[in-house]
Length: 509
Ligand code: GLU
Image (cartoon, rainbow, N blue to C red; front, side, top):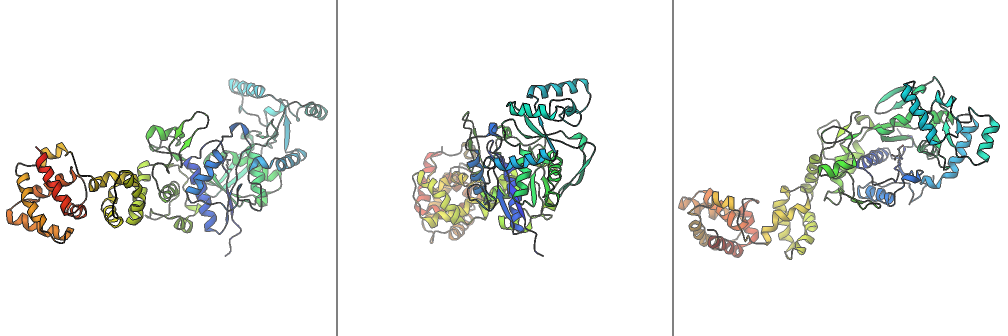
């Protein structure tokens, strides 16, 4: 069956760097669109000029690109429903706002912010109802419902500041259908008359968002749970405009929680707990504060995306590794959980490890080459691939590899004292001295022959592996770590191995 044209949007406000929760929202929208051969739209919701942050829009775009999330329509590439930036659509909202006022679904309100605040405090202190501008309080506040038509007109013409509010009907039930959460019913009496246009003449999020979703023919609104309380108002706006048949389906995604499950994952948690909560590094243009990012911390974008994919969605199987195209195949909104998802930095590292070990050693070797050059070393590429093969399983990040392989390039000058004390026995120097002759005659100098010759040396001389092999490891690596020592020896080469053994004998007391 042919899908009805699926059109979804990611609609961030450029008020700062994009939180990983935002990237997850974009990702779910993207894979949902691609699964249904639909379109994924990027719309910048920048009507709140006070909260606009320089650089945030570029940051959002770069984050999505790095994550492999490409939009089909958007501010930079255009599309059939341009412009895709709300600050460039002001005239459109004006038209729709007038329609609402004309139909009696919205009204002018002249109260100053102080007066609104006073009203709220009064209700709170008297405990006399909902402390909000709603069907009760609007009856005594200063607005076009309480003023005469003439007075309203006069005030507008004289330039008195005003906002436009939605006129929420009394005593009706608003039904919200959510793909993830099911059906919800909300009593209109609990809602406030939200501002639709601010005193600066710009629409608020609620108006602009609904108008744009309608005009851009959005079929599904997939967004964070924090927008669920606004949805009844949005449903109401669709009713006001008579757009009910075109109303998108809603899906509100679960929140991301802190690793301990106590509260929402916030900007501060990353720095406090030592893991990034942003896709890319961000420098606050105002105070210079730096927030760390997944990209700069050495994560592969595929691992980052995989981590996010499973925070709130479960495939219903044990499978954990998903490429983008597998996500597109297997994702469904029905399998998104209602309950919040606990973020685990350890799991994120685990994913990176999985992607690292699944990459070809050649690929990883290419990535590590600049580090090796920077350390002043040169190595034949094929040999580097073999080294990478031996050590990549021991790390989570490419940048951790150098630590695991440095001894291939730099002979130990010091020896781990603890391990020397425990494992470098009185007999070790003599045994190592004897094995030098054996090593000199191993041909070819590969792991297999090294293994055979050392085995027969140990058998003939009744030497335990605990003595010889650990002695060799201390001499060659300098400490107890590292991959199979025969493999290490073959890659380091016969001459260098012998040199290191002699150096250790002479220098370990
Ligand atoms: N501009 C809103 C935000 O910043 C969009 C919410 C929505 O998707 O409706 O998250």
